[in-house]
Length: 199
Ligand code: GDP
Image (cartoon, rainbow, N blue to C red):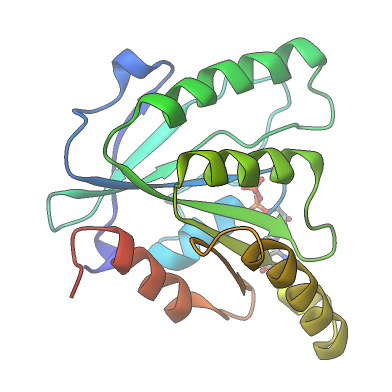
């Protein structure tokens, strides 16, 4: 699988608008501003793939990108909990994304992005719990790892790793920096293990 082959496929506002539920899909989730768009752009070597602009309150869509093997997709879930979003919109997010997560049979893995300086927010805990309950393989990316010095970054990594790995063996964590292009190969290896290319 070549991740630079990613092409925009479609946007969906509800489950019925999603592409045919076949093949393999890995979805990217995270709080707004966690660095999700940057990570997708870094992974796909396409600075324009995922939009990094954020308009609070704007209707958010699930974006699907196909890879050239023809059966794998990357899925960009709407960022969670923009500061100005009210309670009602958070509820909408949970219902809408909750439905995607619960119903999507081609979903084989989840990437959860957290700013390394603020890991394990309430939203992150919710996603981890969901992954445990559904036995969905989950990879946490501690993003913007360039923002911390080596020691503090390592400490944050070890704390999150201990917390996750004691709960289920399908939870794992790595550091990631779009700025420094760090952790890209590690992420690719994990994605390959979840998508069509199992070799
Ligand atoms: P999203 O809301 O999760 O899609 O986050 P974005 O990808 O739009 O990033 C949010 C902000 O964090 C932007 O100002 C980015 O430039 C910045 N950012 C993202 N990744 C990194 C990184 O690896 N290092 C640093 N220093 N900043 C980053």
